[in-house]
Image 1 (tube, rainbow, N blue to C red):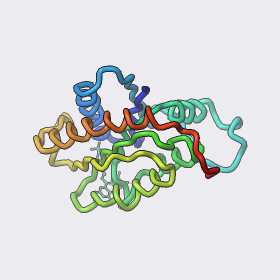
Image 2: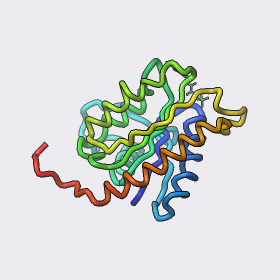
Image 3: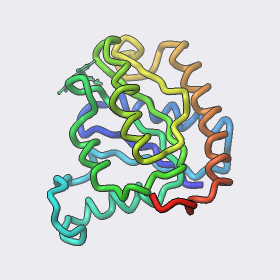
Image 4: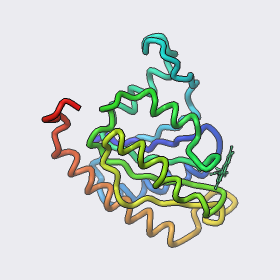
Length: 187
Ligand SMILES: Cc1cc2nc3c(=O)[nH]c(=O)nc-3n(C[C@H](O)[C@H](O)[C@H](O)COP(=O)(O)O)c2cc1C
């Protein structure tokens, strides 16, 4: 299975740093997963504006293809204005409604404060529910105090939670592998 570690921002370093750590933990539990990191910052973004898909630039085509071809995701996002970055929402808007169906997803989020951890519950999870992704019950929310100056995670509790999330995520990968993506209904 191909697992995409998706860094959902074009500014900042912490989400990328969390993904580096998650990659190590996933490998502790499953060495067979093919893991790829994808940073939205590496793409020349265009807004979804209704034009035919073949008229978007090559970066957008590559981004959508890479996401849609993956079999599972660790999704990392910072909190912006009590929500997710616009560039991440715009990326979701590009995807086919069935692109994430029954695929495992775990979420890591970083905010400047503790107060916005429920953004994951209230805003990100509903989008993933729309896609009918297999979202693990574990997600990890971090804030500035969990990192040192080099953006290394220094909070042991965060490490434990990331490790547990990785443990559950690889089990969700097995579930997804055995769950045919063809549906009985037409929806
Ligand atoms: C435009 C913008 C809006 C932000 N809004 C929030 C917010 O509503 N709540 C919050 O906790 N942090 C907010 N932050 C802080 C970011 O979540 C935080 O800076 C980021 O996760 C830290 O990553 P970095 O150190 O890698 O930049 C905001 C940051 C920016 C740039």
